[in-house]
Length: 334
Image (cartoon, rainbow, N blue to C red):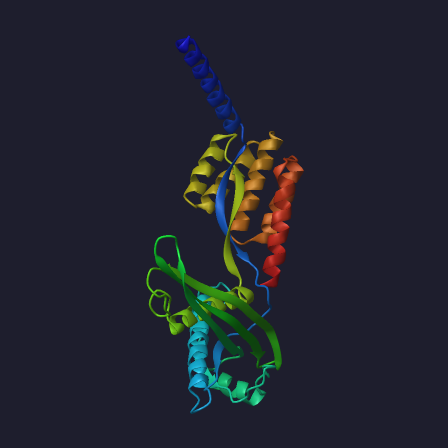
């Protein structure tokens, strides 16, 4: 009886595997991973050549220990924020490996409305750095909260403690040509660290120190603003057709090696040799549209997609057209 049941299970497993293989083998295309640009959420001035980043710091009130300590913590976070922003923007396609200088400007105002810089200050900073846009960290304020207490965990006296920073950061971009301010952005967040232990939990021991935590807050603020003002790379998937003729199979080998020009030449051959097979030609033209998208030729990609539809209306054309149209709109914004 057990042998009979095992044979039935084996046959069912083989049937499942064979049907799965047939299903997989019927998929008419292969998928590839590509990287595309995610547009920035805030617009920077057009056609700038050299930015400079300004860290707006406050000195604190001389003689008041609490004020000086607060200013030191805020300055630590602000400097980390502008350093992170500069490094992140350097790798953004929009800035094309531009080295972005950083300058420090000590603010004298204490207004909570975060008054914009006078243009005379902006011009001075820009001229000293041969810059045409000034990216300014106008204000950075960290409000710390700490607490610790003991409790009974059922067998021993235990301790709990936490450190929390409420983060408040404000940015602006100054265009020296148009004399306009753009890309204003307020970043607010609450970052916390906590620890359970069997000895008293203290900042700088089980918890990060005030300045270490402040640096992390600055890093978070810098990454956030870089994402807001600069396009970034994101992963996407595309499909291409790899079957139907020896040329299509050869092109697929070139695609695996990222040799898109060689693959495109094979798909062009398909169009010449198999003109009597409209569906195959439609797939080859579809692949040529993808190749041109990969190489940044979006107008040609659209033309090849239209050509594919003229040959034969394969189902993949409709959704790929939506993707291509969206990418074109994104590139127009960059």
